[in-house]
Length: 237
Image (cartoon, helix red, strand yellow):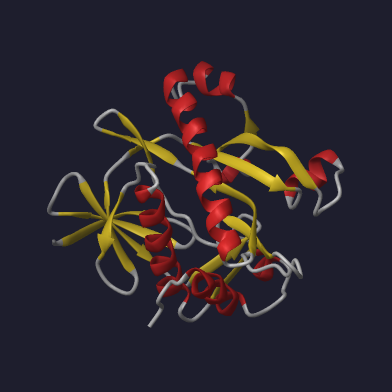
């Protein structure tokens, strides 16, 4: 597999073409950012930890019947993935109130959300990823109705699978975001699932084990990511 041109340089990952037109290489960097890039740091080992954590989660989801773009790990910081035609939207499920929903709706952090909420956001850094609805997606051609429906179904299926998985490690899946794309016409989970894109709390203490440690200057960011992975059986050695 030959790594070729960089086509995406995101906040924490770079994506490269390969000698196979339908395969890409995702490179997990040590970069960490928050607040639309206003806070940026390099954290040692973060790329490796997120790469291996993501591979573990994607394999768990595949085993549960969720189609993903994940193919295989290539190195400590690289993963081979299918090349998707990505939809420019984020699908968000919230099981417990935290983050922006508390600010938007004035609800108290930590309350259980029953049933869980489903939200859509437009992926646009310049606009600060505004919240949208299904009609916006249809009206502006961001996604087709049938694809949104499948993405929503898959997002809730991921919730069922991962809530139980994290509970085995005595952790609560507070919320998370997913991105989807099309591969041969099928809606497939893309991007990543790491503590960068979800909230995870210890079940007993409610200690934050995710990127909020970076946002809120709590320290031990990568160490907490490793704690999450090791509780699930991820091998970082």
